[in-house]
Length: 116
Length: 114
Image (tube, rainbow over all chains, first blue to last red; front, top):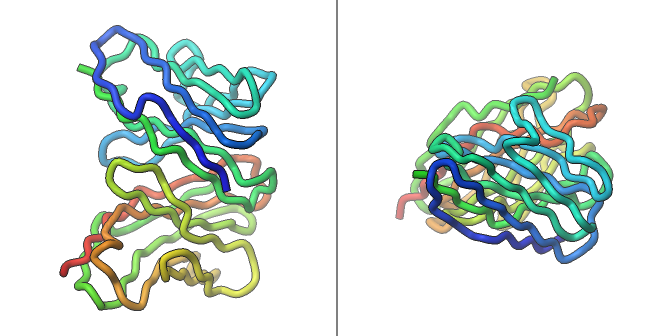
């Protein structure tokens, strides 16, 4: 298993500002994933962050809005830029147990973002 | 394409009664199926998964799930519910032959009544 921590756990931000969310894993992992969970909704994958290369974004998500850094194998950040109330969500980072496609993923506790 | 459906937004059961949370899936190839639980203000916790083999999979906290290929279902079950089982449950699928990551269902809020 993996122990994943996220900072901050929650924040209330003003429209037009940006917030950077940190994700720290207790072991080295090749892939890290960022998900968004809008209120009352399921999880939607934002992007996959690989160390040493640019993140791969899912349809509907762009780098200018959600820039991601992956400086090493245990850490990643997701920035939510130029926020609007529609960005109010829980943001979760996740890592797979291994590289095989049948492996489960582990999730951080999430960052609850409210945009006013 | 891969997708998963959880037809019930909410399930309520009395403590001590059996519970079932339903999940159906759609994939092109063979499915890898997962159940996760989310307690309030916490991240998702992995419960169990189906890869291949025995259709009845046992997981954490006394939960089990039954894979049914003909009905493309993977229902989560527990013989005797506890109030502490009250949480949000997500089913997820990944196509064996796909490089895509997990696709999650919409979630089912389980309430166990004392």
